Image 1 (cartoon, rainbow over the protein chains, first blue to last red):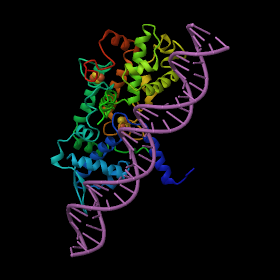
Image 2 (cartoon, rainbow over the protein chains, first blue to last red):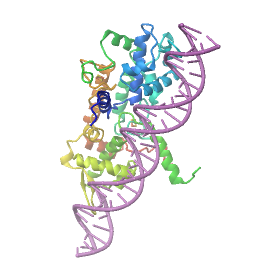
Image 3 (cartoon, rainbow over the protein chains, first blue to last red):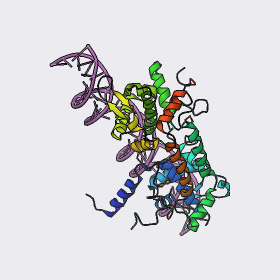
Image 4 (cartoon, chains in turn green, brown, cyan, purple):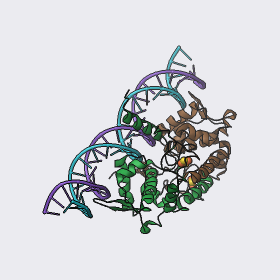
Length: 172
Length: 172
DNA sequence: TTAATAAAAGATAAAAAAATCCTTTATTAA
DNA sequence: TTAATAAAGGATTTTTTTATCTTTTATTAA
Ligand code: FES
Ligand code: FES
């Protein structure tokens, strides 16, 4: 047994991540948190690096960096190389929704396609859950489009919601 | 390029399955369809083999067999070895819901735990999507608990819903 | 009692997703 | 102009999920 604290923390984090894939892939969960975090910093005019983002949202840095690359390519956030560079969001990104974020990372299987895996989702050839799935999907859609990402960031700044666990379950 | 028809059909099926993992794992999608199919057959007092189930729900036989094993262990369906054996459902299984099915295969990360991956989901330490996720989850819960599996099977028998694509997108 | 049948179990293999490592390119401040 | 900085890109590794193959066990009908 390895009692190195750093190892143990990693281990706890790893275990807490097992089978927690409700709706979003690990990658799109990191993407959502990253974008919100970038916005919180952009609201105070600070560019932020991949390293800081990874640390703040408790995600592996290198993997987070890859995701950030994709987000930049999809024009969901901006980036700047070199000293004082980093990732940022500005007016040009203010129309972007979390739905765009998820789509950029996971594709749009969350929003179309049959929930039970039939080749296509349709009223003409509905699977046993089709009509319920359509309803659930409406909820998901509104969850990801109703509030702007900027507003979600403001809520985090106000402390109404948070990007990490503050109740001390991992960081004693 | 391989023009063998069997290969091509497999290929089309494989491709149609790529990135279609909305909410359910591939395994729990097969599980849901399997259980509903078993019920349709049990309603006409027929036990049904893993081979037939796999074929009818368009899932790989061996993988389906593994899933069926798990469902039997979880007492979601019954099984009988030997000639005239197979899988079945009866009165003793009539209280089971699709929620139990999904839980048996995927665990209950779909019903508890933070949708954005925080160590725990709570009102005290809500992630930016918490309140919306709670609503969506209510929808998912009712989708999987409102109708009995037997009723879903009856709807399939009546032709109101279906377990495979009948509109001819794969089987010409 | 035996041959056939079908599920259960175990071991591997293949594919996809998550994560890490290393090199290159752009930027900027000194 | 140069050294330091930080993103971008590429390649690889690890882990998880999906899928297949083989052997064993139970059952039953002949
Ligand atoms: S057909 Fe399955 S969700 Fe629409
Ligand atoms: S805290 Fe994230 S869903 Fe409840």
